[in-house]
Amino acid sequence: MNLLPKLPLRELRRTPNRFVVATVVLAFLSTLLLFLGGLLDGLYLGSTGAIRSQQADVIVFSSSARDSFLRSRITPDIRAQVEGAQGVTEVGGLGFVLLGAQVPGQTELADVAVAGYELAPKGVPARALDGQGVADSRLQDQGVSKGDTILVGPAATPITITGFVDDTGYLLQGSVWVNLSTWRTVQNANRPDSAVTDGVVQALVVRGAGTHAALAGAIDAASSGATKSLTLDEAVLALPGVKQQRDTFNQIIYTTLAVVLAVVGLFFSLLTLERIGLYGVLKAIGATTKRLFIGVLLQALIIATISFIIGSGLAMAAAAALPAKVPLQLIPSRFISTFIGLLVAAILGSAISLRRVTKVEPASAIGSAS
Amino acid sequence: MTVLDMRDVRKVYRSGDADIVALDHATLQVDHGEIVALLGPSGSGKTTLLSIAGGLLTPTEGTVTVNGIDITGHDAKELTKFRRENIGFVFQAVNLVPFLNAEENLLVVDELGGGKGGKTAKGRARELLDELGLGARTRNLPAQLSGGERQRVAIGRALFNNPKLVLFDEPTSALDTKIGAQVMELIRNEMKARDTAAIIVTHDRRMTQYADRTVEIVDGRLGAEAPVAPQA
Image (tube, rainbow over all chains, first blue to last red; front, side):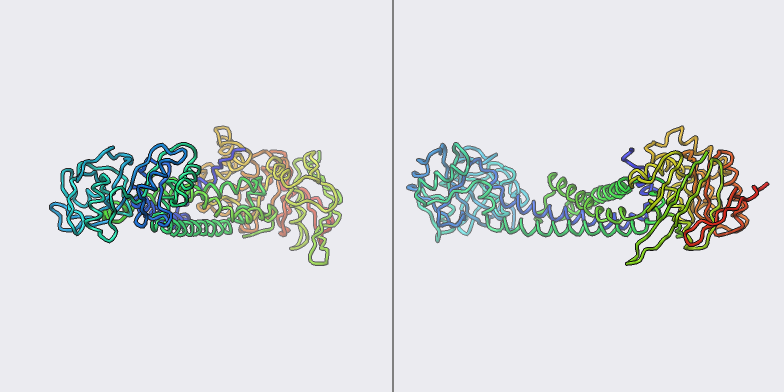
């Protein structure tokens, strides 16, 4: 049997007006889905780049820190215990401090996260000289250029920017990657209440052998519980607000998909109701329920696809029109997942009509004048 | 040779605790090329009889053989295939697919049979429409056709697969007398030219003159059969 019936395609082409309302509504819902997803991605990527870019197997916090960099302190003694743990091959210190920075030629302070490192994240040079660092490219939007010396925090600690690196934001602030000594200088000058002594870092970046879970277990055992080791993914979700943001946005996205399902379901239910007489005739002359339902499904999928294309255009136009500080990032995987979500909602929505299509009796065509 | 052979057919519907007998021991044979008018008032069972003859309903008792195929025990899927291949239907008002032109409405039959509306099928559709006097209307949508023209397209669709039996359900009820008479004459000519058997359900006694035989049905029982002199 020819499973791609011409009938539903011809109906779409010949009577497009019947489908306009559903297409427009679904196009707006597609835009909304992409917009919400884009905001989630923008917030997530902007908040977590500094951790995602770490070339590490686990991140080690002090056990009392409750997975927070700002609360965590690793002393040289603990570090030595970690270095001695089974499977550990490389250990580097890591520390962050969030501050405002004066940028030459700019009146507004730029938001920076001064990040001290030993083991370089992706794209960051292996070593940094004292007083120098590479900046996250998002700081370019705040007027930072290569060669600028920015003055960080209330103490105006100078850092000279030697280059840029992409996707290393920390809590929506542009990171400036410096060596640990420079980080301590910045921390102690600008945050004297949480000053760190030589050798102390906030967390450790660890590379090692074996599974991440086994490595984390070995480290925490070696430190006698003084540390809490997280995999990179766990450390990303432990960043303040990241998990909550993701859960909240995903809830809204799933709710919107449920609305898409309801729109498709309602629209095709009404359309099927209108077509009952016609379906009776078609069944009488030999159409199967399967064929008629495939027609409904095909129309739902085509409408969802057209709506997605329109919605994508609208979302991209909105993204281009928005100021750079809005953390909206439209990434290919979001388009793909949104499209799949729409198609699934269209399939489930049109499936609501299946019962009605099945119930149409071919005998209803006879003896019916309307 | 007999095209339709219904023997002792009963159709009983259950309504609450009561059984309603829609068709009571009905026996009817229709031969090749024979046109039978089935005459009866509303609720007499003529729709049920037509539905059983066309494989739209299954009988509660009795046997139904069409074109040598015993469809009595067919399930819904088998009946769908049977109808597609063996029966032509012309219904009352809801009939044509509104967004397809006259030619495409005929080609629906080809598509349902798994065809792709190729040259042969299109040629056949045009030939039929020409024959039915619709050669110039092949590209018109049903809404652009008159009632009589629409019914002629429906006749074309019913004949598309060369069925041995065509069932007409009040084919002229939505038409005025003059157009109704023209359509009936056309039906008669087409059936005779093809040696195709037909049952025409009507409650209008004037339409029986186009049939070879009239069978009356009252309260689910087939009554007197009166041969009708074929129209000159």
